Image 1 (tube, protein in one colour):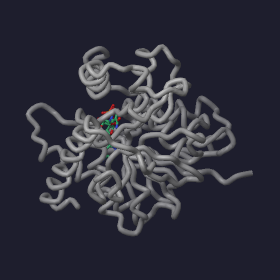
Image 2 (cartoon, rainbow, N blue to C red):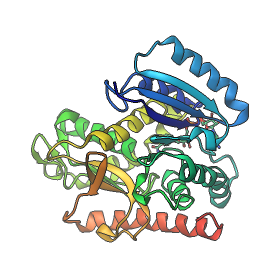
Image 3 (tube, rainbow, N blue to C red):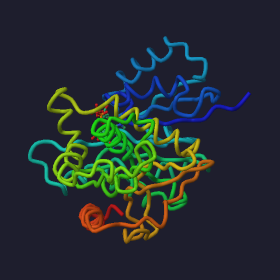
Image 4 (cartoon, rainbow, N blue to C red):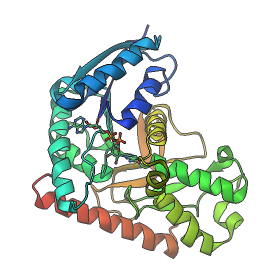
Length: 328
Ligand code: NAI
């Protein structure tokens, strides 16, 4: 039988954690034949709540779940970790400036990056979900010089999935027949969901839609501001859909994209498409055998260029800000 894969989840007692852990334990993250060991990291006051979640995980009697460890020490929680899901973060509270937010998150992601550097398994893959996700990933990466830099990724899969459904609703074509959609840039309101290379039922999506007003004034803002719309409706931020996207992100990274399709992941730029090297920005990527590649050679029109550049500019500003704070 296979040896178990160690999966660390930070912020395990939070609402995304609650929606995520049961799906990991049931085999949806890595596959129905892959046993897992869960490592839950929480801050000390939330350890008891994490223990409660662990009790419920026990009570599911998941055949693939081979153990649950809970800790408030990153050095313990990341020991031997193969997949690290960095969910716990410091949310922006009223009156908080961006600098304060980045500094507070630096206090979380810098030590976690260091602990990953010192204790994770050689094949570790890291997904940062906690916001500001792209820049938190950059902070963790900078603290982990011994880990190959491309292992640090941030989540734009929720934005990707949101865009799929909006395009499906507009065209009446099921999401299963929509391919090659791309989220570019930052996981923030500046992100750019791009349908110019997408296909719906085999036809070019932009041509099928043929409605630039809808694109600019409806589709893009609906996808980009969906997080705020969920908070408004639900009274709490997206949790199950965020957990679902985290599952999708890792599952695709490990198991590969289908022939002729791609996905969106925020990954360290190699300079492709004019995105400055090193920024953790969302790109169209194909995956295979646990590695990914940026889709090359796409023609970026003026409409797209301006929007990609705006989001990348925001990422550059965030990078400058964390550099000024000494976090990278
Ligand atoms: P939550 O507030 O319910 O849970 C966060 C948990 O993290 C709490 O239990 C807290 O105790 C824990 N935590 C805080 N600092 C920690 C540390 N240093 N180590 C370990 N755990 C720590 O928040 P929720 O709803 O689960 O969201 C988590 C994060 O995910 C937020 O930053 C949110 O903005 C982000 N998010 C990202 C999305 C994306 O698409 N990238 C989508 C939705 C949410």
